[in-house]
Image 1 (cartoon, rainbow, N blue to C red):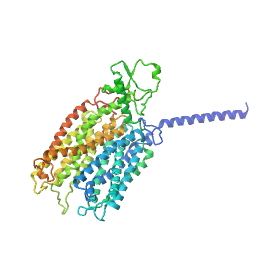
Image 2: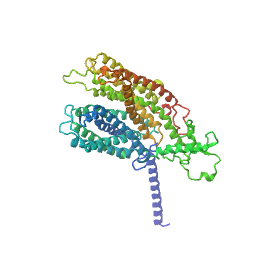
Image 3: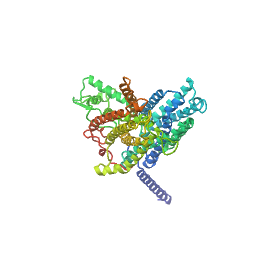
Image 4: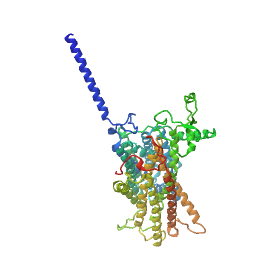
Length: 617
């Protein structure tokens, strides 16, 4: 062998060694990369890397985004009644009804946002698009107010109403107003779920952070509304409507920019198939099999599908007992021939077990959700009758010339919410975890039940305060009882809404199957919407039933002639009855089938069965 041949063989050996070493280094580098376990992806559709995506950096951006967006929304909402009466020249009754309808519409639009998010766009794209609509609506409201509505210049105060407006001017105003409703309504149910997506629920440490996120999310919402209820409310009340609306627009625009700035960092859950279509398919298949004489008791097997994941894009769910009539949708005969098995499946005649279990999970949640509507009726009183009651109390202070605005008492609710969230996560929950031996502390269902009880206590407290306010009545619709006595009822509402609404967000997000997560958040908003509507129904019914034969009724214009305390006590009694019904449904609630190889159908809902997280924030 020549020297040249030896050198060539030596170089080949060296190159092979270097290639092998490079391959080993790449393999070691791959081992160091830790991906999420819940199937989330990055903006490019690649598996999300834990250290480079999600976590509290992305979650923190979403919290700031929520705070700014809430400030922008309530910058319009908090004084909209005053704007309609002083600027648009509507009566008090018409303005109140229009605001109630507008607020309810905001929450109704949440269903559209949830549908688009879960079915087609995904949560990130849905949030970005609806936030852009929200910003455009606020900008149009600011411009139309400046150019068309505040005429003559300087109008819009309590003593200087504005001139009448043309149909075109009012048309532009209402387009802007409902663009705000559409943008905020479509955005709200998705941003909470998208924030939760930033934490891997399969990782115990991140699952703990995910639970804490919902508390901080609600805290951010309340801090944003605090700024609106104080600073923005004050400048608008003094007639600076354009400045207030432009500040809201700037806050919403900044929220959108911050949201877009976090794009490279976010984790994404892929949108699944149309959830409404899936529900309809299960109903259709169950009915068809029922009409054809197929029975779940017959010798049948359930169709599971061939894929590891369900065809809708989510994880498979195990079969559970209950709602047996829906099982017909997934039934297929054991003696089916092989040729039939190879035919394409008609999804309107045969559904997978996962599709059936998704529908079952929604049906199990609905009774719990229905019980939360009456709580929303109680919660709504804080923005309506609490304010009316406060306006009929002594509001003077030690500062000469300054009286406490009745609507500003909601500040005590917001401060109570912030304090409760901090104390609960840092002190109360760890204490209860040690006391009960349950690492997660009280379950979501237990906290929601406590929220119902505290809501009833708030109504009883408000009724007691009203009794003493009326006893200290002096002039028409006035009293010597100071407004500071309203603090306990506002504080009780604050604690109750943390227990109810935070627990509700966690519960629906955890119990809704893949493809229905945003729909779960929309249910929370629908509860508030229906609470607004039912509050109007109850108030109207009580007024008509009590204002007969010349009597002023329970809620007259002059509260000293009425019995507002009886209305509060009525709501307290209804809340207690609602709690009793809630206990029945909560005790019977069963989790959806787990995807890890066994079903929890025989077990009641219990957070001990979920990821072993702790309750520290």
